Length: 401
Image (cartoon, rainbow, N blue to C red; front, side):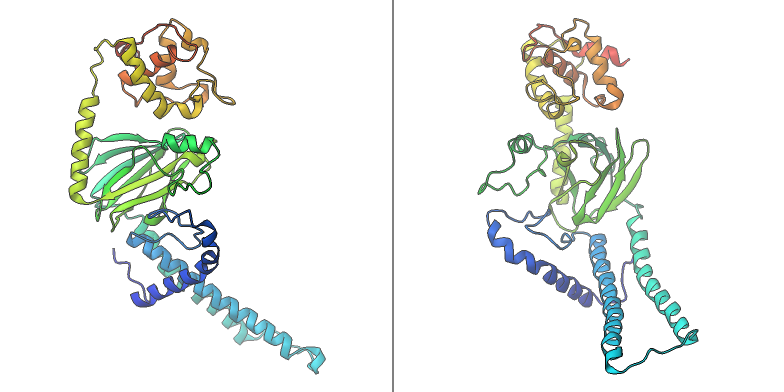
């Protein structure tokens, strides 16, 4: 779709650069005080006031439209208040002017009807063209379903190269620990603080990527400012958007809906790579998936299941149930839990498969039988829970049926 505008590209770039200079002047003055903190390429900058640098045509058009409308508003502001203050100063009673008595001026009424109409049309035309382009998700090279989960993102590649790949992206555990400790210490900056994840979304450069959003629990919102995308993820519904990144690199966003107590720990990290690197990544992920395809009939030892379960717990459970298993607030503790200690293995299996507490405890059906068996075994044999009980993958498989 052609996104050309009535202004020349040089004029548009000039408007963008002039605006960036104006809104960044105040930030420059105070940057020296925070010299230890650096701008994050593809993410927020220190004392950022302007919009993110665009890496897609859509984002570039959004920035142009922003400054175009801002310029119109500034002209209207100066014209209205200029006339008002001129009239107050030059036609005040103290210099001998007397108030005029008139009404029903046809020329004035025509002017104040036609001029606003033209202004609205002038703003609506480029805005409408941009909105239509933003919703044109046809002819995508790659389609990814993005699922919002409290509090992480699930990515499933459902069409195009990499079809069948799926994984969950969670805030890096080191950053979560850093946050629990009060944040980065002075002089020790972490430029991607609370934006680093264990599994970023990987896409090829210069390819049209269609994003289909939904959610498992509450409303989330998938937003990456550098791409110009911001799409709600609603349980029971699907919405879509798209982007075509023109630069390789790492780009960041966040869930843009207040989705619960862990809302600030739900970042988006998109890694844009070359076509060759993307093909290599797809091959590596397929190989990794094949290696993780555990045989549910395999009988595991307690030691091996605990080691596997510790990793699953750290990636999926620790945010709510805590590293010590004590829980927090309304989150029930696993240490000493009757369900965990019960010799009936079906109870914890059903909780993990189907969720509990009206969705407060989410379902974890996406985890493999081995992963579920491992994390249950880990909880039964960690902290003060030294039951010696073992849950095998076959037990979980039987409960799924």
